[in-house]
Amino acid sequence: MNKNVLIIGFARSGAAAASLLLKEEAHVIVSDPKLDETDAKVVALKQKGAQFTTEQSDALLTGIDLIVKNPGIPYTIPILVAARERQIPIIVEVALAQKYILDNWVAVTGSNGKTTTTEMIASVLRKISTAEKHVLVAGNIGVPVSEVAPTMTKEDVLVTELSSFQLMGMPQPKPHIAVLTNIFASHLNFHGSRENYVAAKMNITNQQTSHDYFVVNYDTEEWRHLAQQTKAQVIPFSRQGNSQAGSYLEADALYYQQERIMAASELGVPGEHNIDNALAAIAVGKLMSVPTKDIVQALSEFSGVEHRLQYIGNFDGRKVYNDSKATDIEATEMALSGFNEPVVLLAGGLDRGDDQMRLLSAMREHVKTLIVFGQTADKLAQVGKQLNIPVIYAQDAPHAVQPAFLQSKPGEVILLSPAAASWDQFPDFETRGNLFVTAVKKVAQSQEKNKEA
Image (cartoon, rainbow, N blue to C red; front, side, top):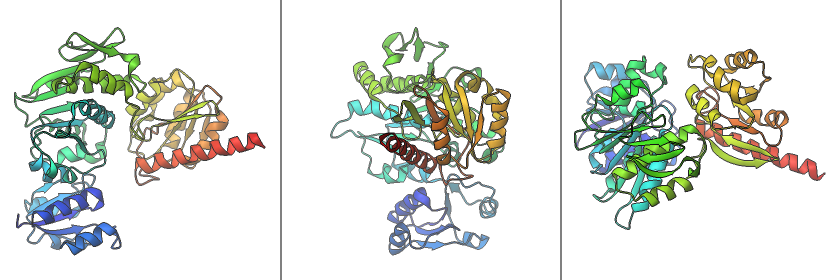
């Protein structure tokens, strides 16, 4: 490659990018103000020739041919503003690895459901995997594409989850099958406007041709309009029966182009939103020639994804769910819609300016007690007060577990679905969810001991 590349932000994607660039014989500098010099990955990459610094001054840009930034870092930080003025290309790690991705690329994006849909699709496609044909999963789901794409063969299938942050930093993504689960108002503090956010999402299909496929949710007028902007073959999916040209729900059964696939009740995960996810997975499975019986088996055995309406277990008669990935209001609305039992809802987190009153309808129908925390606690409390349901303040999600057990009865649901990002109190939603699960098991164990005593 013989290029000078500056990586802004280390983390896992930065480490993967640095490793790949070094193999391509680039000169690599990694800049991260929070750099940990004792990190094993830092030590290993230094030994391979990478340079590291905590500085982010304009002086770092001298002689730089390319910048690879962490997807979540805004383009408005001074060093990136200066780089744009100097017309230095700025990409994300996925774009760096894209040249290694071969024909069988399935890319999934959307405001909600993209991780579950990605995993559902992978589960379906694994039914036709062989010793020579592997199904690889990477992207926003946790594994950098740079770690898997360089080893791909022509037989392998790569399924990637792509966030709007990643798509914004990918000049020419061209998946063979692109999937758009939905688009709501999200990450507007990063993108600046909803129009910019939608444009970032639609970058997933901008380079597709008539030989490719765009699998898209048809259940709003906006999404149907977006489908008209692609050059790919449109494969719609609809829970509301807006099209039978792809996959759809009819009479509580899931179909693909008039072929009955399975009953909705056979899905391994609850909730109407998971019907959406399954319809997208069915469409991709059919496009990839997966037999119907294998699609049914994969989706009926699918038990969910960690932190995404994850069933933790039944504790003292209460069903407990970890939906820490619900970082916006729509995700929490969808989670609540999956239950018929009374719900004790644990919610709160980073205040990004959203109107929590949008939760009124979903909470009125499902929530008996609300436990709030984080920056949005007061806003959520106002929703609870308007509905005249009990509101309890807690320090954070783990500390909300004890009052949740006290406020619930056997046969009811305890649900962590924050309707907000975690960054006000935790480094990520995974940490928030893991600490919640640990607290649940600790409280449940303590209650069992008290009974025995």
